[in-house]
Image (cartoon, rainbow, N blue to C red; front, side):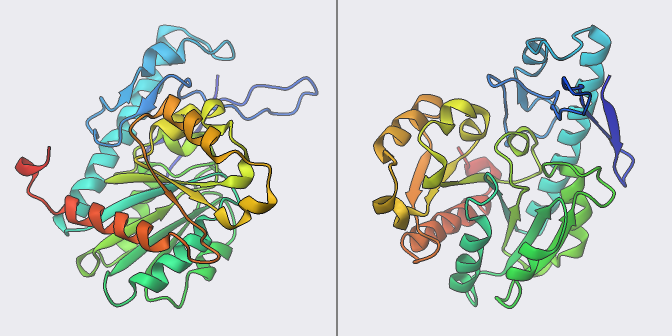
Length: 293
């Protein structure tokens, strides 16, 4: 069986750690198969599509009914907490965007440029997720945003993602009544962050052109669960053997309706379009519920 990570609020989170050939733990999540995705618009415990069926597809997992029921309860608890997060954000008129990527894709650099451009026009809070250190949070100071740090290595078992209870622990440290937008910088990982609704209103994935064209096919859950894919580091294209159109074609295979924006966080190209997308999410989150289609 996996081990449970006990969060500060008493919720449990289970991970599998099967043994590799050399006897060392080989980290493996027992949450979702590639064909399942978490629907960020549902926080009622029914937001995980294909959850039970895909759990049974993994040969590394025990597939008995008891185990599936335990995992269902864990996900249901996460979804209930996500719904509470979303309700608190809506109560204060705050839009939350979950930023996901692999390590080194440029989330923090893009956030720095974003905060620079939104300063004085949009009141922004940042939930910075990292396993250890405050390095990324420190890089975001001085741009007018309220920043709170969640180190998953401190009390959360060193998780490779943020989940709803972790985000809930951070929300009281932000002055929500004084904010318009909360940007959640998730832990760098192409698998686990996509599996957890944290109470966001939209999801954006930052993808670097240095990562290769095949990643949407290899990590479909992440790309399928994203509302927007920001294709970052386009200033490097002249120096890379990267086929941008092949990447777009692979992306459309797993998420035909996803929006994309080409950006260089380093040079600033495309950042205005990214900020405009954030503005559209903020405007949409403030529409009366009955009018949102």
